[in-house]
Image 1 (cartoon, rainbow, N blue to C red):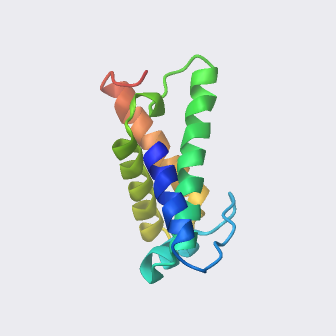
Image 2: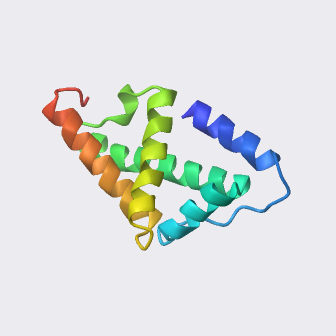
Length: 119
């Protein structure tokens, strides 16, 4: 998380573009467009949103005594999940960033539980 947050801060300071506010209703097209046009401020906001939502989804499970996946991941693995969420958005541009993040998290968590790697 620290690496993604640091990257987000660097990207935010890299240019004068103001980041678009990213919420649970923001469409995937916003994320895809930000990456394609190299809108660094919006890319950083999207990355931060995805990582934050994955942390919240994980906390929901672990707070209820269920297995989670994020605590056992290093910064690179979390950054890979964020990149994969963007891939999910590319395949479903009419979906929301939140929904695609949830789909990815749910799938990875299921695989981790089946493999005995969820904590």
